[in-house]
Length: 219
Image 1 (cartoon, rainbow, N blue to C red):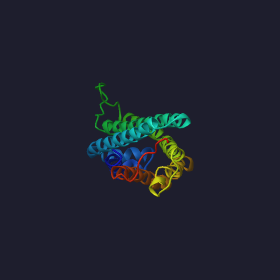
Image 2 (image 1 turned 90 degrees about the vertical axis):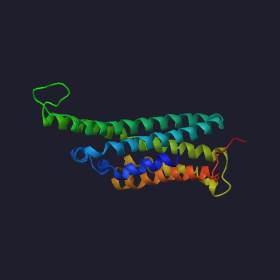
Image 3 (image 1 turned 30 degrees about the vertical axis):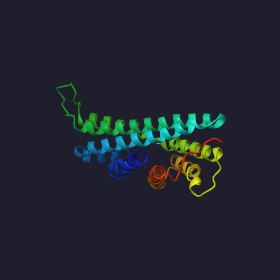
């Protein structure tokens, strides 16, 4: 789940036309390619659900092996993971609404399931797009905090000995950098950190499948 899901999401991210635009330009980028975007949205949704599902399962397995404060931290982590997933789904749904709105007729006479005017249509599309941007805005923070918690608990539960033992603790600085994206508000920084974060999830999944990385257990 931590291999296939992130790769699907990353592929969709690099091909999604609105990933680099905001406001009217963001809406227009979706409108221009409305006929072909729904399959890509399905891929993105599937990848998102699989990836965060895998991350939630990893967090849950760590909860089973944790005690005291670590168990409480991981419980907060599970909430953060779910909150991030919800933010992604709402954000994607907003883009679906923009696309579907473009496919809906403008008819000043028939008022059932039609737009009253092109201005009405565009205003609604912009509102949909802005609502999605709002939902997405805090996801680097919730996702980054979840990564910090996983890294911190991994470090305090079982002190690293070999190089691979540092993989999960290394999520602390990575999560910190990722959650800084909305604070810095630099698109180039986010465009760097998002794929790096995704690829780290892929690497974790591959290393766990190969038995190179194991979850820490309480002594």
